[in-house]
Length: 252
Ligand code: BTN
Image 1 (cartoon, protein in one colour):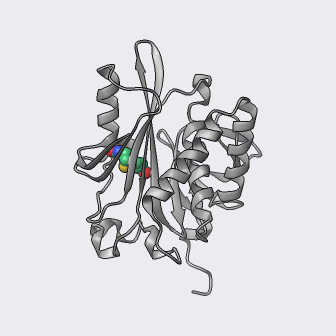
Image 2: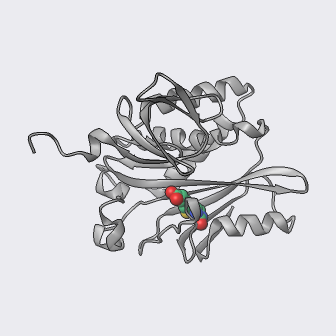
C-alpha cells in the first residue's frame, strides 16, 4: 500500500506504476488530498480541505471482458453494505455513485488498461468523510454530502477502508462467478435509489425514459421503456432525473 498526504491522482499513480511494470495486482494507493483528482466522464473529483478517503486499486480479476462493468457495482454494493452498518440509509445510483438522500457521498471510477496484452482495471473510490457544506464549491453544495453529516458517531476512515477491502476481496475471489453476480444483483435491488420510479437516462445522444429495477449479469441496467413494454439493456449511460424526485409534490 502506498500512502500520500497529497498527490495529483491515485488513479494516475497506479497507472504509471503499471506501465513501468513496477506494481503487483492488488496494490492500493491512498491519499488525503489530490490536486488533479479524476472523476467519471472526464470530470474532476474535488478535494476537500480535510483529509477524506480517496484510494485506487489495481485489479486483475479473472472475469470475461463483458462483465468488467460489474466490478463498479460490486464495489458500490460492498461500500453500501459497510456504510449501512453505521445506520446510514444508502442509495446506489447506477453505475457508480453512492448517495445519501438526494446528495452524493461517494463515487467510483473504474478504468480499463490493457498492458502487455493483459486487461487490468484501476478502480478508484472517493468517499467524502467530513466537511461543512461551505467547503464545497458553490455548484456542488446542493449535490454533495459527507458521512459526518449523517452518521451518529464519528467514522474512522482507516477502519472503513479495512472493512471495505476485506469484504471486497471476499467477493472478488469467490470461486464461482455466479455467486459474485448474485451478490451484486441482490445488492443492487436493495440499494437502487430509483426503484419503481421513472427515470430519464442519456445513452449516447438519446434520452430514454422508463423504469429500471434490475441489472443483468454484466452489470447493464435493464430499462423497461414507457411507451412499449420493450426491455433495453443499457451498458453505459447517465441518469438525468427521476421524475418523482425532481418534480415538486402536487400540493407544494
Ligand atoms: C465519480 O466521478 O463519481 C468518480 C470519482 C472517483 C474519485 C476517486 S478519488 C481516488 C481516485 N483517484 C482519482 O483521481 N479518482 C478516484
